[in-house]
Length: 249
Image 1 (cartoon, one colour):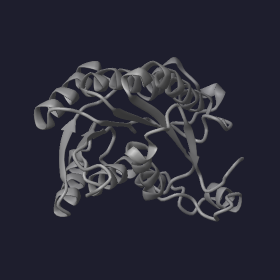
Image 2 (spheres, helix red, strand yellow; image 1 turned 180 degrees about the vertical axis):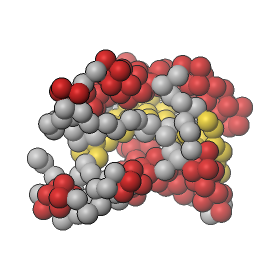
Image 3 (cartoon, rainbow, N blue to C red; image 1 turned 45 degrees about the vertical axis):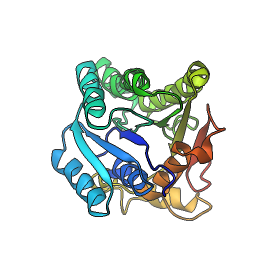
C-alpha cells in the first residue's frame, strides 16, 4: 500500500521536468494520475508509459490552463476517467525573465494569465470534484520570497502564488482542503539544458552558495510534493516550503 493508494491526482504541466517527476512519484505511491499538458503530447504520453510500465495508473489530457475552456475540459475528463479528485498539483507555468526596459503589457499578461489566473481558475474547478478531504499544492519559486534582478514580473507572479496559497488555505480549510506551495530554487530540467544553463556561471554561482553543494533534480521537488499530497501532511496547510538545498541569496 502506497501513501496515496485510492487517491486521484491532477498534475498540470506534467509532460516534462518537475511536473513529470511529480506525476511519476505520485503514481508510484498509488495515486491514479491525470498528466496534463498544453502542447507536448509526446512528452505526456511518455510520462503515462513510464507510470503504467511500473503498474501505475495514468492518463494524459491536453489542456492549456491559461484558457478557461481548457480547464473545464480537463476536469470533465478527470471526472469521466476517475469519478473524483483528491490532489491537485498546480505546476504549469511560464518562466521568462526580462529587464525593466523590455517589460511590456504582453509580457506581463502572458506570465500572470498562466502563473496566477490560470492557477486560480484551475483550483476553482478542481475543488468542485473534491469531496471531503483534499490537497492543493502550488509550485511556486524561490524568487517569490527572494526576488532577483531582471525578473520583476516573474518574481511578482510567484509572490502572488505564495499569497493566494495562504488565502485559499483559510478559505478552503473548513472544507478539509489543504493548500500549500513549494518554492524550488534552480532545478536541472529539460528547459534548464535547452536554455544553456548547464555549464553556466549562474549554475556555478548558485551551487557555490548552496550549502548542499548542488542544484536540484526534479525528483528532489517531487518527493516534497508527495509529502504535501499525503496524509503525512494532514495537519499542514497555508505553508510555503523553500526547497533549495539551503540556498538563501
